[in-house]
Length: 454
Image 1: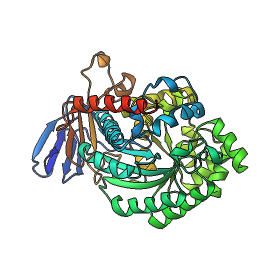
Image 2: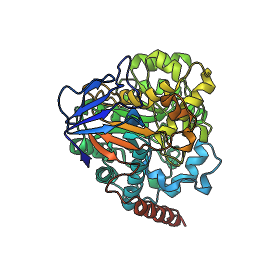
Image 3: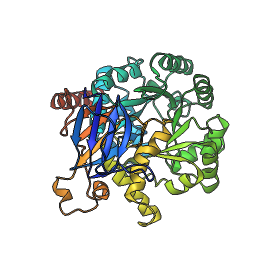
Image 4: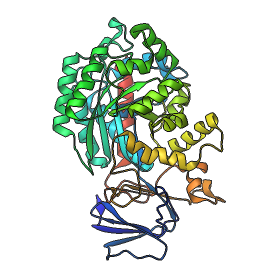
């Protein structure tokens, strides 16, 4: 962990700030928080320990990923899952994932967080719902794995209780008893959940989806989240197949089901949120529900296009997410922002969605989705979570607007990343992390996971 008590990131090439804030002269950080935004030629009000010359860098708030499945970094581009839509894709992968071991999850978590961090992502939410025999302490493993990378995380205690024998989608070997789920959820919150500004580890409750948990578990999870004052997360309205499943099993559409089980409330954020009608969008906005937009995954599985602009107009917070690395096959947040801009332009037209919209979804929008007011903006009082990108790659040759060029010219990797005032990425590398060794270990674990199936 590298950093100083006070740092001046001086005169960035461009800076993405909220509203009319101007930081052309740079950002001053003290004790992990942003304390000043400077105009050109303005000096810090007090001496600083370190000055970083950012004239060749575009400065963004740290990107925030609102939905992921870290363990899926072990099953990218897996032949049995190629060229399938969601339900068939899941059925082909559930038996593979059932063989997950603690070592594999540890490796997969570090790979996902490192990949995200190198793309400028400083906070990530993970949805882990696999707890086969031997994996009962999966969230504990993720907490430990996070330490080496240093990112902020919202680890959601996922769950599956409705197996194939009971009319659900997952195999019985991957489901748990509901009382076991609830007891472990409470244990994890009491042990790990940090509150207040600057939290590095937070816990949320996340029954996987309508087709993998019971109505009772959804209700009980909402009641427990209300009691413990934490957030709720689930997949919802990702595909038309899911909508048909809800109609057949529960006799209602997805938002009606959400209300029935006590989830139509501000604690809730939903992954995907594609197939809502106009009236449902208004209900979601009135309830203060958030949506994690997953453009890469939605395109790969051909699930549909989230209605971002209508949702935002109704009052829904929109964040950005890479989703699982087996449905996106990448954990790159700056690339995800580019895909979000493009797919939303496809829905609304090129004049209706700008690069600033996509960057907003990836920063302040995502922070709001996760219920955090301390991150996601370059503003006085916020945590000093920042991502700095250079434009010296060939893809930027001949580019003009530096902020727009990050997305239009396809930026891939941050040059510097700061979390809480400490440099976590320097010159495109994570100090103290043997990345080649970690990658080699991940290849070994991925091969072993597939071999277990046979």
